[in-house]
Every structure is written in C-alpha cells, then in structure tokens.
Length: 162
Image 1: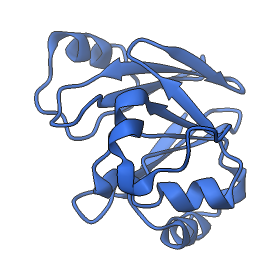
Image 2 (image 1 turned 180 degrees about the vertical axis):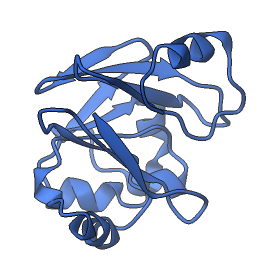
Image 3 (image 1 turned 180 degrees about the horizontal axis):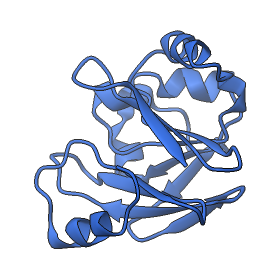
C-alpha cells in the first residue's frame, strides 16, 4: 500500500492511494481534471487507470474537479448523501451510475481493497474519511479534522500509514 498527496491546502486537496496489487484511488478532487492528470503523469500514473474516487466533503477545495471527472471517466465516485446534496454547484445528476452513496461505517470493495468509511467532525453536512485495507497494510486518509474524536483515535492506532 502506498499513498501520497497530489495537492493539499485551500488551493485544492487530492490524494492518491494504491494497493499492493495495483488498485488505484483518488481521495478528493480539489484540482481540475487537467491538473490532476498532469500531476499523476509526472508520477507515471495514467488517469484512466484510477479505479475509484472517494470524496470526503463538499467544500470546493475538495470537489472542484468532480463534475469533469464524471463527464470524462466511468470511474465510480463514493460520496456521502449529505456531501452529494450540498455540492449543488457541482451537481452531476442523481441518475449517474458512477455515483455511489456511502455512509458512516460502510465498507465497500474495489478489486482487492476494502474501504472503510468513518465519520469525522468538520463544518460540513456529512463529512467522512476513508481507511483502505489491501490485507497487507492499512492506510487512512484524514483531512480537515475539526478534532480527533475517540473513534478516529482508535482507528488511527491500527493503521500502517496515514
């Protein structure tokens, strides 16, 4: 399991996660499609090889590229109902088969990787974080934590990478 930030901060958040057998994820789309593609290419990663996108919350520095990704890819996008409803300026349509609504404590699988959804304190409607488990390592992506509650502390103790 490996991961790195393509960008962090108020100018845009986007994180890359890859399992030991090559399942590829983006967490948040706070950059334009073209900028994300450019940064991935610099790392030798093709944007069309991304297997899934996970969205933490609706603030624009986390979803500015969402609408373009839906238009330009067939990649599934895992997003909470509250985040999806609040992301009005980036609305992509309820009917899109790419949109996968998730909630706290859900577990979904993408190829060999299990992804656990955990709620987090933040000033947004239904903000979540993600923990990726490829049976070799566990990696958590936590952004914009208002504070670290007991559940998050417990989960963090069992991670190999953050």
